[in-house]
Length: 216
Image 1 (tube, rainbow, N blue to C red):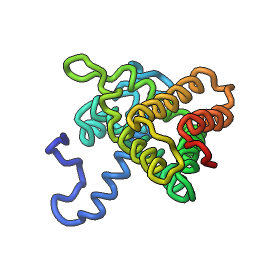
Image 2 (tube, helix red, strand yellow; image 1 turned 180 degrees about the horizontal axis):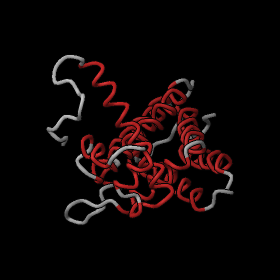
Image 3 (cartoon, rainbow, N blue to C red; image 1 turned 120 degrees about the vertical axis):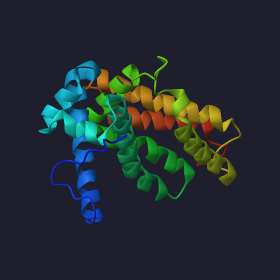
């Protein structure tokens, strides 16, 4: 929820396109500053004041665009997942086979995260610390349904094409996502680990487990 007070100099009518562009740019700036602050200071240390300092703005500007730290953290997660999907989706879509698409999903995600380590650290901090009002984790398996559904659709397509054998696609989707998450968690803890090699071997492991007899 945004404040009803408008910042000084902001028009009350007209200029809708410019205002929307400026607001989007400001929100993106705040989200980027939040990612950097969380990666450097951890979830607890990344207060709104520290995020504002990093962004070179006042804390009140953050309060204008976000209802509080919880909403900002949720938007950080949404932004990272959106950026990762925009990087990975075209790689998956351009493949000639479903098996190649599964491999592209894993390798593409690793490629994206290799260049966005702060984003990965921020995700881990938020997942481990952000809570709902009743004290439950805000993110987890219960919030991953869109990911599971997308992966289920991919594995069902492989079954329909004859590339994959019969199996429970929900079990495979959950296993796939958990393996990717664990890969990133391990690389975060051990940055010297060969992330690309891990991704290649993980893709081999998953595909060997689902490939139909006689399929290439």
